[in-house]
Image (cartoon, helix red, strand yellow):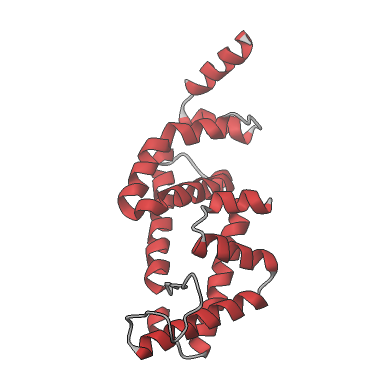
Length: 199
């Protein structure tokens, strides 16, 4: 046990550059140490920019860091490089959020006898959007549809979705991206959204 403690202490005392080299050499404790070391600063940056989506983007940032770490060179600081990745993801998130169709699905099907204070054209549009959403889900691969339902309807974090499906985080994110693309295409085809504004 003393050897393990000494090993943990030595890892925590390494520089970022040495941790990166250790990770490349197969040391499985190096990458978690990098994440832990920069957790507060990266998370603080994300919380200030995307609020409740920060946890998802934090996981996505480090997934991206892990896949790109072999391309990192030491001309600049590792922290600045990580922040550059996080910043790009924030920009992408804002871009997608501004284009995303926010679907408000009633807990029960709307009926004319129900109390609904929206105007008739708003009621019709809501029903049409819900119908387009459900019909598109029905045509998707099951796992893609599950990601859409878990994320949009239940608000499940991407990390949990990936664990439920037994896939890497990037796979869950890709399924979400492709699913939203299909939904937008259906809404545009049915003329429920302005294609130019949704691009």
